[in-house]
Image 1 (tube, one colour):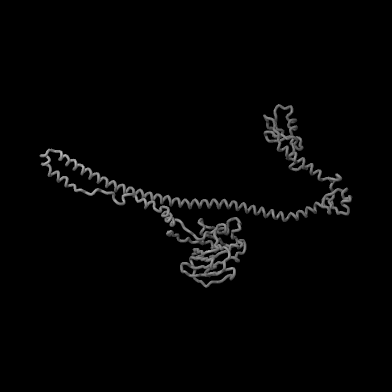
Image 2 (cartoon, rainbow, N blue to C red):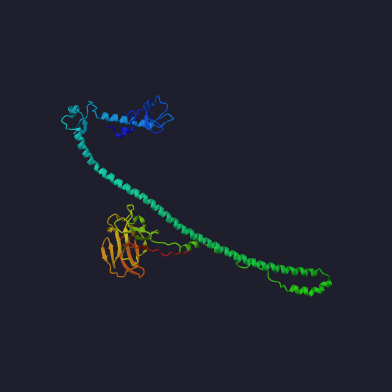
Length: 462
């Protein structure tokens, strides 16, 4: 029975492997000799298969020709492999000692003296079984690789989702900043225009009053000068009136430009960027600890600003090494191995929560107790947990609405307190030798929020 490949490489007319194949415009291929014989003596040239008429001749199908030549060569090679290269006899036996097929003449030769033989079919069956057993670990590895490939595909898709979501958030944040700057620009330009209008109006009024005074004085000067050029008798008759008219205008001081008449440019431009930046502190917030979505368990979700965690239905997320999947928890994006750090968490009146720090070296896919220091609240009871002391029940009775975590890496102290009552809940002392990541477990679907710190601007002298 011909193989599927052999059928595909066979001419539909002669049913043999293509010889010098040509292709018609209808994409059907035939041997050049076959199609010429089919068209011989016919006025119209039709495809022997689909009967479509062709106005042009065929073209050589070099690709198909190459495939056919390769197939014929490989078939000849396979035929020659079935014969013994020394005796040209069929290879019917398999030498168990030399691990090679042999013919009956080889079996009786000196080379294979006292060797063990099996019929080819029996040896093939036995070796096929051994090969299958040898192949099993590779097949398992292949299956594992395919599963990893699926995970990689999911991760790639998740990266695209993350990028799109992050891009939206970045644009939203900058939109708010742009809006603030645009409104601040409008307000400052409006203040400048108002000052300009006010001072222009003041100067206009003063100029109008000065023009009226100049006109009055000019008229008096002209009238008096006319008297000076009049006849002596006329001058003497009008002298008294002319003097009174002049004396009605006392010699006033020359008007001067009033103080503050110009635009106060220093007020509008002085430290402009700094003043705007100072006002922006009311628009922005700073949170000392940012939650890392790449560490979030699949049934937890973070707020857009990465400060709040709450429970949700389980989602399909990449099983990346940073993710904690067996614990209902999320870590911060930044770890600490030196200095002093503090962060406040709003826990509210929830029935349970778990807060602490996790060592960087802990394998997050399994048991994390070996590197976890945490304080928990569950149904009115506080407990502490550390790698060296295990679980400890605490004597604190009051339920806290906020929890403050203080980490002093240099002194080796981790403390938990209630900032509203200034009450210490518990403190750990340990020589921390590696980076520690803040740990958050909301305990339920209710949100757990890291509180922002108050932002202030100070100016220090050089």
